[in-house]
Length: 238
Length: 308
Image (cartoon, rainbow over all chains, first blue to last red):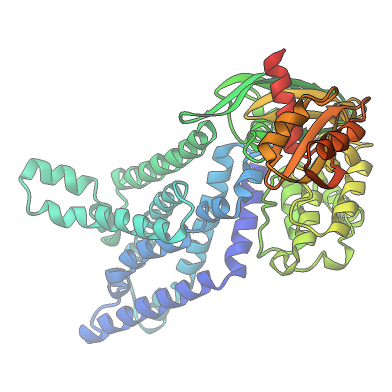
């Protein structure tokens, strides 16, 4: 546990010391803020929801996950610091979890910064906070799953660009699988939509906390984090 | 302190380390000497638990590094050949991170950072971003990282590569100093290095241990033959054949425009060589004694092994 927090702390400070995190957080806030206000304008302020933010916020969050995780393990490999990390008395799982916790931490910071959207609604209207909070829970789970995928991909390469592109590819693929499902025969379509990241997000945005969806996102995280640990282990035997 | 038994490592089809065994006792400074790609780094990576061997076992402080690597790693300080550093961290943060990761508490970490910074002469640079340091200082930071948690065993992969001569001698004296507290295994491909820093040497070549002995005995092997370099005007191959027939000449090889003559240490064939050359009507331009290069030692040791 202590090792995880040592690694996560170092990693988190690393994010704060490099311009990358600031740049993507700015871009994220800029784009989601624009959609948030545009949506309200379109419906002539007849409703108080964060639908505008959510419309692209979720996709942007996946992009964020791909970029924020690209350096996590890939850079260690490139710098060779890898060798020091893996020869310290630390379990491989602790390395992976430390990296995961740090990236989730940065994402939480970013999501907290978007809380001024609901705050504005609260000041100027009377929003239903239920769906807003469940949407945030959904974003947190979605983003964390994306980060887990990113860390796994990052463990396979020492090239950050490859890591970001492949992670982005996997995440968008998993996201749009739900849409592809509508063109498929019912049985296969159901399977596809069940494994789609998008399908499970919808319930959260309607204000429903569906245990199946929580289990789905947690399973994605567990699967990819476990794969990342195994990928480190495999590296030792090659 | 370090025990290696029948260690073998394949990279795919390629055999990198071939059935190596050796022991290193507490407090020894041992040099792992070998040319590039001899298997030095691979051996060290297995010893530190970074890699698993294909076959065989290693023990560090009685911990088996295959089955109980996590425990064993607590006793190791390691500086890989490339001296990996987080270039965006300050020296202090970097040392702090690794000290904490290796189990030191906050107070102890602070004290140890001060100690190692003094020991490695990094006082002025402790709050500098590592990316801005020169190669020599980076090397010292790498060394400081390896000793910050006071490990019993220090494993240093080519600790003096890529730094200038003054820093090399500083690093060597630092290693000697560290040898009083730690058991050290260092690798190198430079012969004088082991002479200056180590008590004992293990020579590896093509993944095999070809000799291991105390430094004094190694010098006997090295000085075991006298080598002369001749510059002669005439048909070199013919001259070589003729010189081979002289009593006390072990071997004559052609090396470019020169002839290298080897003879046992107790015989000085120079008089006979000059006489033979002049008598045969050739011209001797120069004759000088040359030291044996590392390659020659390897050659000698490997051929000895084969003939034995």
